[in-house]
Length: 313
Image (cartoon, rainbow, N blue to C red; front, side, top):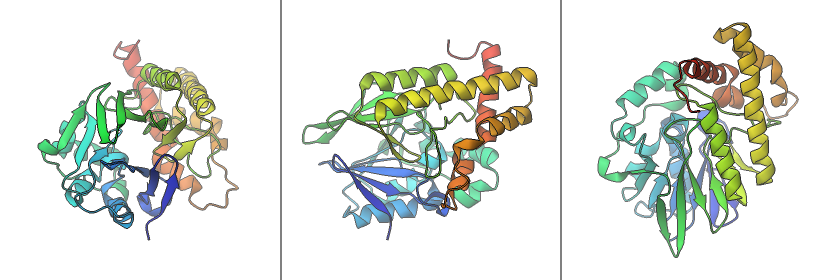
């Protein structure tokens, strides 16, 4: 049986079982007249999500929307499979990244370069989705979930230029993808997610400021679950992002090589994973989703682009 969890506000979390581990990536099902799934995980584990939806009574014609925070494969890789299993669902994604779900050849190729052998072990290729079923959205767009309930869509770059968040104002629930960071079982703090190719520190900080202005009642991370209390969690995320960026910048100034920045981050933030945890997957989850090297790569690329005047100011 697929793992699912009942949350407040007519919401269920479905464990995508990414990489065969629990609590790596969550899919969130909003129980509304037009049922909506937020995130679906990678293609190689999407069967767990489809099975979970069916176990919750979702028939093929029931799902109205699949909302993707961004097109990285740990969030959107299984979108084509979900679309095939639920043929009336509209796939909702930032207008910046929508074309890559219609024709995912470049997305798959670039992901294969980044992930290497993990592409065939953990992620898998994203399959194409008919353009008529993909809705590219901009900041301020809304989804009508029926019964007077809406989902507000916010353009929230920083982690990626194609990142959006979704806000259910009635429930006060804010779904933030990777834009707040990562906190999975066995982690002692929220860790920023700063991967290449288009992480932007200034935009990431602005996105966190915007979230705080919303004053959400609950903040849901894709990796993994709610962070509480929300105001304190968002403050922590901003503080940790600043600290990671400052640490990486100091290391980069000392020696502008990726290995040096990676090693510095690893020494400085080793205590973010509880090595004494009785969860055997604690370290593996973090290494997979927010490892030191991937975060260092994004920060180093940001520093290089900033020096060239190609980042937000």
